[in-house]
Image 1 (tube, rainbow, N blue to C red):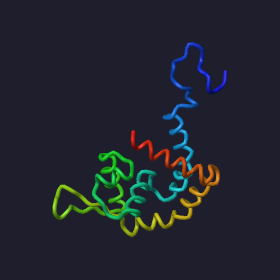
Image 2 (spheres, helix red, strand yellow):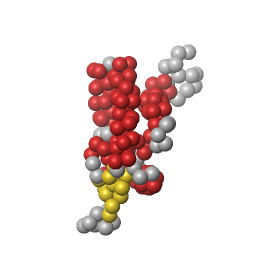
Image 3 (cartoon, helix red, strand yellow):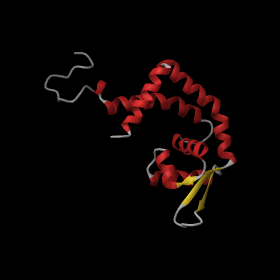
Image 4 (cartoon, helix red, strand yellow):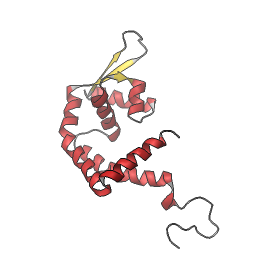
Length: 150
């Protein structure tokens, strides 16, 4: 029996080797391993890194937009931002027009982490491109964007 064949009496589902959810999880772990290693010495998590990256890229923003761009549920994002506030890596201010809204921004200390890890992050991205190839990587990113339409 090969990895792509079904066991006798198996379901009509594709082999786990060809299952999109499982394949995406395997790919995520391959990508995130080096990123976790990169972050291990600076005391921030991959979720905190994503928030800092989004703030660095897009500038100050409201909590809902930040959660969406950082691919986090709003309650998780709120907890993570609180931790980043305590570490002095972000600021949070109430909106002047709507006091229920809050704007989150990166601090110079948060920017320093991004700057410090920039070369490592670029090396990780270059390694992925080297293994997959520039054209296939672009295709993969386009396909993954298509998944947002589901």
